[in-house]
Length: 134
Image (cartoon, rainbow, N blue to C red):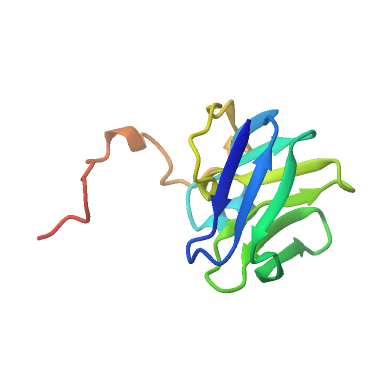
């Protein structure tokens, strides 16, 4: 498979060639801080290859306290970007950075015991096509 992706501002573009091994939604406190949301949605591959198409110099990587919680992002718009971890053995790709359709669905919620207290029964919350007015 081949996937394309980009950051919000479009300065950074990339291509992933290969298959993803796993797709997890992580609820740990660090991932919630990274995303500002209920969870991170990350794809993992030990075989897929990342190729930067543009803007690689705008990709910055942050390793929290050198402990292996790693996030890459666009220095222009802050969007999450792919990175390579575990001494080059693991490609981690934020699912939201992929512009192509994905052929894999999340396989599970991880660190679910750490989820935010407001992250429950979200399927019951009203849904709007656009930002609600009034």
